[in-house]
Image (cartoon, rainbow, N blue to C red; front, top):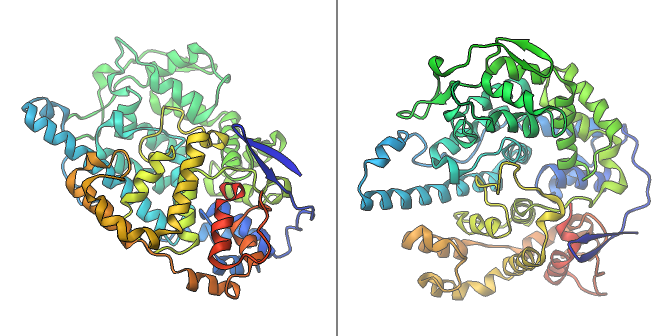
Length: 492
């Protein structure tokens, strides 16, 4: 029995004592549930039954094959509109500028809703999990980029490369207009190099802290001078007159490097593969990577010439991934909690607007990580405020039909989440309508468990034994409410 803490909130995690299954044997129910909880937001009965018959390798291959499935959610209506040039915005009157800012807020909310809708309906949740993983690795934010269109295009880039070649991915993200703006490379000129992109490239995107020097950052920044964007179109632009053509020395290698050459220098370093694999480990296995296993998988990653799918597959078939000690060792992010609950219990949803605000209130505002390091994750997701808000969300969710008669009274703004008023009257109306369309067919869902067998429910819903055992005789909806209120429901 192990005790972990949510910043002062004790949570008992009871580890099973059974030994790790042999890799060539079928996963069984518990192994399949664990794999799907980690890679698919949450496990449902049908998928668990199907994956339970597969070996580790077969299961990983099936998940990776699913990622070839196309997106199902249409892009926002404004996705192909022309780029809003900052120069043009500066010519607007005060009234026009205020209207433009309100429109940007509306588009930003719609962008978050678009992605959440795809998460809720995708036939390949792993695609969305990996897109979110890279969103928190190659961080940028709508607040600074100030262009929903550029943030949307960056999201498409993230999902295009999410399980592709990391080298190609790194080269593409370095030229991504949203990234160029976010890390100030648009102002990186040979007469006055800006080091922001070069520093984060080394510290957060490739090598990790302590594996480069300040001089390496300065020299790399010179290589990226002239990398900018066209202010009229928002497209990447190279400005040769602003590029430093001199010799640079980066990580012991010298030459007349441009930005692409520096990226290749970083890709040649074994530390880069180890850094990415360690992040995949923290995302899918446990908070504390095993250095020996990380080096082993990183070598396979390098041998594959940085095929991300190879690295992820190696993580997902490893003994460590299925180790009993690593089950229920990760805290669900707000997106995991919200999307996973809605998917696992097969809620019928309308517009995802309520969940845009819910995930934001819980600390994960999509397209707006808190800083260049992204969301720290882990136990940082849980504090006295967010733990209470998580429980309130789950309580409302499973009482939604009881609460719906009072929904229409919320149109005036009372009882609506903080921030919704920025979306205007239309946003409030859409929020209330979306809440009134939310449905959970408890009887139909419970029919999968012979009417609500408590032991079967617990085995699917929780990654470990509950902190507070189910009272004897509790079944059906009462059992669902009890289990989802339990602290163990916050773990995966």
